[in-house]
Amino acid sequence: MEWGHKWVVLAVTIRFPWPNRPWALPVLFALYTPPEVSERLGRKHHTAGELARILTRRLLGWFPERRFVLTGGGQYSTHEMTRFAHAYHTQLTFVGRFSGNANSYHPPPKYSGTGRPRVKGERQSKPEKVAAKPMYVAWYGGDQR
Image (cartoon, rainbow, N blue to C red):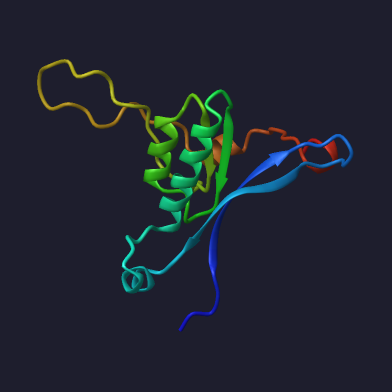
C-alpha cells in the first residue's frame, strides 16, 4: 500500500534585504521510492541518504567556487555522508545528528612500518561535554541564541 510520496529536497538558505529572517528556497529534489517499488519499476534503489548525496554533488558541481553548510536529520547522518562531506571538505560542511555519549577519535597517526597499523587516533572529548560550553548561533530575526 502506498500512502504518499517521500521527497528528498535540497534547499538553499538565502537572506533577502526585505524580510528579517532567511528563506529556504528548494533548488533540487528527488522522489524516494521503497526498494520494492524501485524493483517493480526496474530502477536501482537509492536510500534517502544516497539521494541527498547525489543532489548535493550536483549542487557542488554547479557552484565550485561556493562553500555550503549541509544539515540533515537522523537518516542523513550516516558514515557515508560524513565520508562524502570529508571528500568535499573545501566546499562542504556537514552538520548532522550525533549522540551525546558517542566516542570520537582523531585520525590515526601515520604508519611507522612496524607492527599492526593503528585504526584510531587519540580520544576526543565527549560531545555532551563540548556542548556544555556556552556558544551562540545566529537565529531568526537576527537574534543570537
